[in-house]
Amino acid sequence: MNRMVFANIKSRPVRSLVSVVAVAIEVALILLLVGLTNGMVNDTRHRMEGVGADIVVRSSSSSSFMSMAGNTLPIKMADLLQRQPGVKAVAPVAIQMNNSSIDTVDGIDLNSFDAVSGGFQFLHGAAFNAPFDVIVDDLYASAKHVRVGQRIKLLGHQFTVSGIFVHGKGSRIYIPLSTLDQLAGSPGKVAVIWVKLDNPDQTDAIVAHFQQLLPGYNVQPMREYLSLFTAAKMPGLPAFQAVMIGVGVTIGFLVIFLSMYTTILERTREIGILKALGAGKGFIISSILQESAFMAVVGIVAGVIFTWIVRALLHRAIATLPIELTTPWILRSALIALLGSAVGALYPSLRAAAQDPIAALAYE
Image 1: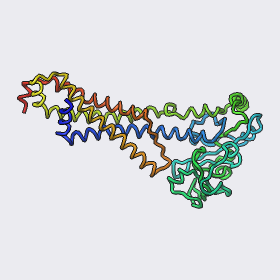
Image 2: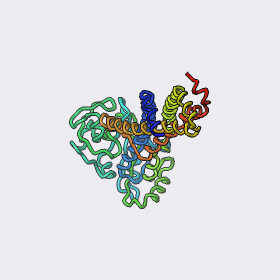
Image 3: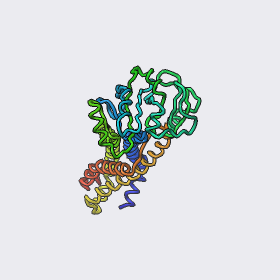
C-alpha cells in the first residue's frame, strides 16, 4: 500500500505541494502566535523578577502591566515604608509610555533602585549623572542600534545615552526619577514601589502589616505578583490564542479537504479498478488517510523548520521581540495538524469507498 500512496503523491506534485505548504503554514501560525504571546508575558515576568524586590506596592486599580495604570502612588509613601521594621530598601518607580513607540520609560532614583536590585551591570558606559541622561538595556540597544553618547528622543525630549546594561532589570529604559516627574504631568506620583526586606522569610508578616498601614492600596508578595504573568491569566489572551489557532486549523482542514476531494474525482476509474480487483472499503479509506497523513507529517516538519528560521530572522531584526518555541507546543501543533488533516480527508475517503465499482469503471 505504501508504494501506491507514494505513487499517488508523486503523480500530482503540485497538489501535494499545496497541501504540504498549507499544513506548514498552519503549524507555523500556531507556533509563532503562541510563542510570541507567551514569550512577551514570560519576558516581562523575568524582567520584573530581576528587580530583586520582595514586596510590590501598587494602586488598587492598577493592572499587572503597571504602565497602563499611570502614576498614582504618592512618592512620600516610599519614605513611610522605608521607616518600617524589617525593610532594607525601598525604590519608587514612575512609568510613562513613550510618545513615539510602545516602549515604557521608567524613572528611578538610582541609589534606592540599586539598593533593591543590586545595581546594574553595564556593558558600555555608566549610570546617568545628568537630568537628561538615559540608560538602556543591551537588547534595546541592539534592536534600536543605540550606542553610548548617542542622542535619542523619549517623551518628546532629547536624551543622551550614558550607559548600556545587561537586560533583566525590570524596564529596558531608565531615566532619572526627577526628570520623569517633571515630564509625566503627575508630579510627586509614581506607578510602583519595590520593597526589599532584611529577611525574605518575613514577607507574609510584613505584607499583612503594610496592608493595615496602607488600606486601599495593592500590597503583594513578589512571588504572588509574578504568578500573574502567565498567558492563562492575561485578560483575553487565551481567547485570542484559541481564535487564531482555529484560523490556522481551518486553513489546513480546507486545503486538505479540497485536495483529497478533487483527487477522488480524478481517481474514480482507478478506485473502480481496485474495487473490481477485490479491494474493500477499509483498504480504500486507509490508503487515502495514509496519503493525507504523509503530507501532514511533511508539512509539520516543514512548518517547524520554517518557524525556527522566522524566529531567528525576527530576533536578528528586533532583539526585544521574544518568541518562545517549546517542545510541548511543537507536539501540540503537530497533533492539531494531524487531526485536522485526518478530518479533512475523512469525507473524501468515505465517498471513494462508497463508489459503485461498475459506475466507477464506466466513469469518463
